[in-house]
Image (cartoon, rainbow, N blue to C red; front, side, top):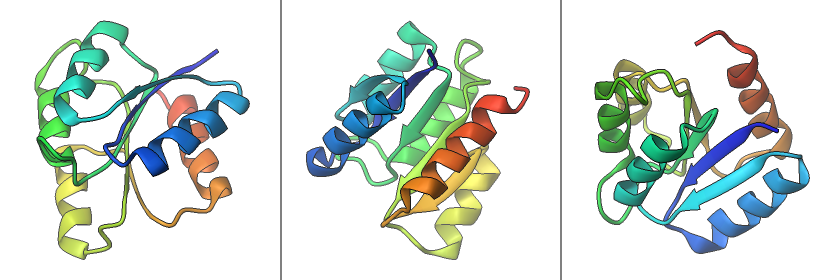
Length: 123
């Protein structure tokens, strides 16, 4: 079973996403903010991280920068799942090393395809 860490402060989005991915046979852990997400990423070494962009403590960009700066978490694929549809945010995410950038509302099939692509890709 593959391990996914979800870093998202919007409980109304995070909890149903956790439930859905659990039903899709993933082992899901969730974090309510960026700092706890970083801590869990280092401890758990998940196969994939799904992260919001606008978090209440540090933003998703900072989470990604911290992950990429740490040898223990450098290669963990990260998918941003965000309501931010601006080109500048997309470009910044890609420059920092995001593996995918998906905007809300998201089709479940789109999310599952992105997850599968990252879990099958060599890292």
